[in-house]
Image (cartoon, rainbow, N blue to C red; front, top):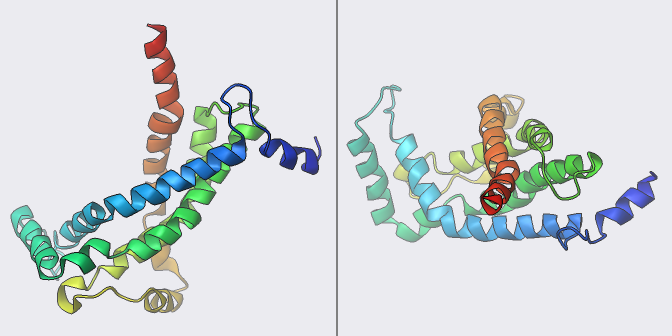
Amino acid sequence: MSLVQTYTEYFEVSPKNGLSQFQTMTAYLGGSAFQTVLDNPVTAYRQLVQQYAKDAAGKAVDPKVATAEATAVFKANPAAAAMSGLIPRIIGVGFKRVPKFGILLGLSFFLGEDGNISATAAFGASVLSAPFINPIRMIEKQQRAFFKTTGAEKPIMEIIRESAKKNFVPLFRGTIPLMGHSCASALLGLAGQPKLQKYIKGE
């Protein structure tokens, strides 16, 4: 199979599901962008609670205190707090989803699964896409790190410059746990859900 032939088949509509691989990728990205905007306030609040779960000394704080701190930030500046981290998350739709879904659909395509995502493709995509996804996640979290004291997001370029001084190592913290989380999500969702639906319909 030539590269040109493979590229052409990527845009051909499958008779099984009525979609091409390109259309499937576009649908994933569009849905991801829409979901990102809608759930950003919830994500921002959750991450603020997580940040306030420990004090400056690194000791655990009472969950009620952490929740109260996050709530106070939202009450002081609701619009800015709700939209905090949205820009890297929107950018991340491309930088995070393209590697993940691209590798997933690519593996599925080369394995000849014709739209049916297997556990092998889901596992491979989770492991190979994590190094692309994790830096975006870390930048998003760092943007809210000083929201309580400054009331504003930390500039993205400032975060990148600080990471560059440490060879960007801070941006890759948590990559291994992310692989496990992504793998479980892909196996249960993208790979497992269609099989569960078929099983239910069969019953």
